[in-house]
Length: 362
Image 1: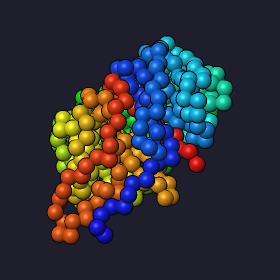
Image 2 (image 1 turned 180 degrees about the vertical axis):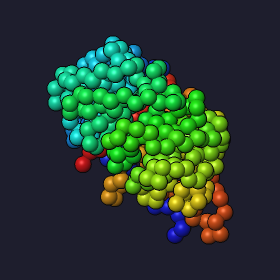
Image 3 (image 1 turned 90 degrees about the vertical axis):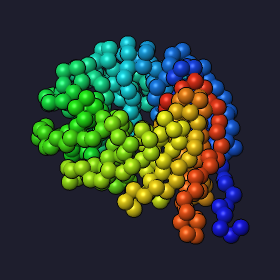
């Protein structure tokens, strides 16, 4: 009995899950792990962002280019604003004062301040595919159609376009913001550009199609997964080189990195499981957890004193969320025999959950 795990505690907060096919936003009470409410939307949602200081979340409906404000106390839509006719993605500015929405019609970046939801600065660019923001006020935009990387200054709106030899699909800033990683799935390559000089530093061929990214806490390791191999590629962005390649179950997809201990959690949609690796220990297998059908995005609850931390796995095919209690993942067998880990619980949420955000209550 002394070797067992202590009784689980709830997490003081709510999880808002965007269900694309059922056009709903499901609210999960993480204190008791039960579905609290389902909010019907006018269009299919694809992204959810939590307000950094207030109990609110923002939901993107890309088909209509609309951003919804949802109050986490009233559990209702309290505001809406169109960023454009059609949108691609949405991110919170590093300052936490506004949202930036990448739009395809008209193509560009639209700023929406959180205090007013009134559209502010609009930065034009070619038809975009993806974007990322850094702490110094620069946006990196992958423009696949004309094979270019656009670097935009958020305060001034000035842009610099850099031609790319490969068709860019995704971008990710290095943690210090001085370089940006640009992925091309068709070319199976990762190119690293210097932001200040606006030029290519190195092009790194990959054994996979780079589609999913995750970064460890200090930014020194970038994990890349995608079609082509049952493995995750580790990139060292400060050394601008490829490091190890870890086996990560069959057809690894979306990932998340835990903080304490530092594990890499990898969803495996084809086998309805999540693979957990200790990337600080040669990528050793920590656990495999059977979840629902077609697991995708993995969302972690924040670390809080005297509260358990959980991983919330969005199962796109079965329409539910598998909850994994993180402190049950470590191998406690005295001779190190591997044992599969059970999920804490599974909650039905709606058709094709694709994104989620956690709102914490003090």
